[in-house]
Amino acid sequence: METFRRLLPSASALIIFEAAGRHQNFSRAAAELGMTQAAVSFAVRKLEDQLGVPLFHRGHRNVELTDIGERFHADVTVGLSRIQKSAEDIRTKGRESNVTLAASTAFGSMWMLPRLARLRADLPDIDLRIQTSMRDLDLDEEPIPLGVRGGDPANWPRYHSAMLAAEIVFPVASPGFVEKRGRPERPEDLLSLPLIHLEEPVRAACDWSEWFASAGVRYSAQPRRLAINDYVLVMQAVLAGEGVALGWQHLIEEQLASGALVAVGGHVLNTNLAFHVVWPKSRELNTPARRVRDWLVEEGRRSREESRARPGPQ
Image 1 (spheres, rainbow, N blue to C red):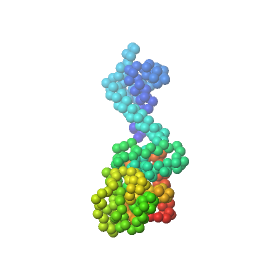
Image 2 (cartoon, rainbow, N blue to C red):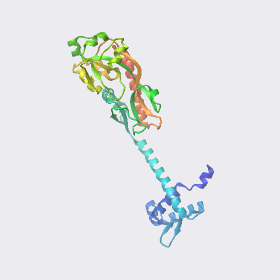
Image 3 (cartoon, rainbow, N blue to C red):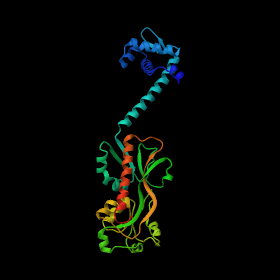
């Protein structure tokens, strides 16, 4: 390191040399840097003495880079540009208060939106941006620090993860539907009722076949069924009294607590999977993103505790 320090010019000498070489004129370089022409000339001469070679041909009214000077100037320019960009990136990240969270539409609208007031109260200086998509985004390829994924973290080796909610699934209906058709108490009672199906286009999702199988009931698909490829619309159809659908506990907690939805069928499926907040291992989270991640994890923990204390499907 001592050899390195003796060989390398100071940062200020390199900055002065870069400006002088770019302008091919010591006076213009001095004006740009807020120095005198004599100070620029002295700094360049000292740099040449340190390197042991002339970097400029000096004329009566102008200067011109030597061949060695041109090569050195090109390297110095690239090096200083990279240092400048890195410093600007670090400064921008240090000031950045916007945090983007990639998630499904269902998670964004049914889990996050009811909690936004609490997030603003807890993190008033952070602007959270929720980016929804039909598929899980590759955060390594996107300028997005955080995402929400359901499944097994072993399948995401490039990501860190922290649990938000267990995947717990059970059928739900509206109170109006139950009043009209009666409340099905057993899984087999659902076979004669209109079932609403989620046809998830990309993400894997539990379906009626899986739920009935977990309850030990043989199920054949209904010839006339309502299938929707968006979970938010599925829940809207349930609330409208169109039939029974599978409900993910962490998404419908608010509707269950308010009585807008009623658990039916008498069987709960715990898939032993979970939903997690994830972030890439390839880069460090900045401070605002870490604070949002920690808030999500704590909110998930609090929500799980409340669900366990609340009567109903667990």
